[in-house]
Length: 65
Image 1 (tube, rainbow, N blue to C red):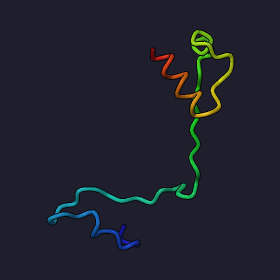
Image 2: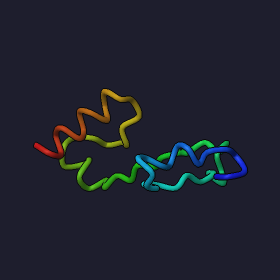
Image 3: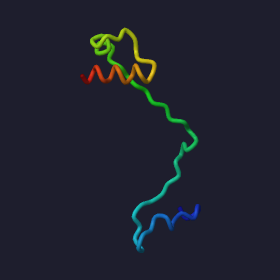
């Protein structure tokens, strides 16, 4: 924090409230995975994993029924 001149952003009214840190993989893209229970999809009429947002929303609505 001192090296990057960030100390001022962590102090309020003379007290340190939080510490800033460098994110080690700041340039890494995050990917998300969704796991489906195919038996649940079968029960709501899907014979495949949803591939569009509309199918995804429809399947979840039916599952949560």
